[in-house]
Image 1 (cartoon, rainbow, N blue to C red):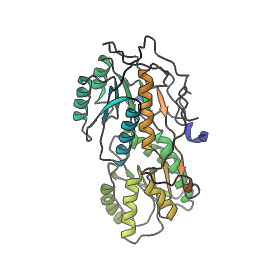
Image 2 (cartoon, rainbow, N blue to C red):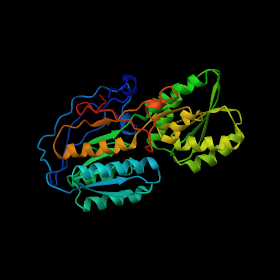
Image 3 (cartoon, rainbow, N blue to C red):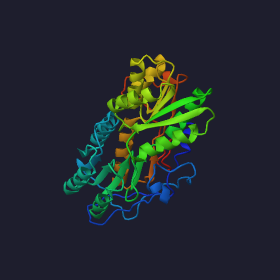
Image 4 (tube, rainbow, N blue to C red):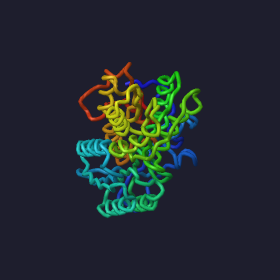
Length: 364
């Protein structure tokens, strides 16, 4: 599937690429550093970053063979339907490829996640898949995994160093795509309410920065930054109730995921407020159905099932000593009333699964 270049150019992979696999020895696998200091604490590289170099296999890599090879998944939380879908897809892909995956849920607690990683290392896993609760606070656990000869694949949220591969999407670009549509919808100006994800979170920062980079400075548009609602609809409902009292003239709502925007829409409907544009990120099918019905306006796709599958595929390639780029971009696109029909379906999140070039890590 071809992806328009404007949707993927902003997600340039880091310039160094390689693979590393666990051979059962105690030597640490080869690791990939972020492309720059900025990338170390941010989401995947921006459009200013260099293009990806071809992937290459790590030297002295011994393929791991056998059946029911143990791999581990340290997940940040299962409180979000997005992460539930991601984990379920990863489990299914691992089973289909002959791996025995153990998944541990940190429930948002970084201390528990560090303990989870230690438990997975003790179980003898060959690859650690990690969605970090806090990218900085898990670094000692990543180093412990490396010392045990375990390769590390991060998903959704990158870490500063130590991961062999990161699998994700460009959250800055997602915010930018929605911001451009919001700019178009607000041609006559108006007030924007932004409901944020988690305080200090990398995904939050990038979805915020991508959107605000477009919308700030637009003539006649004012922005109200709402509270952190942790990507949870119930939290967004409460936040929007308070925001609506203070901002009855709101013209557009942008949240860092669709679940929160749907909560905000619920509040507006209950209050009898009409004519407010609703936008978000993730491609929740409920949001797409709202776009079709005229009650929602735009979302950027973020298929969690594909993210889960690609993550396990990357781990599989590492263990087989096959070339893997340091960064894999699962791709995104914008959905509006103009193209919603092609993405409607019966899945929880809209499918967007462009074929990946395993040399560059980019959608073909």
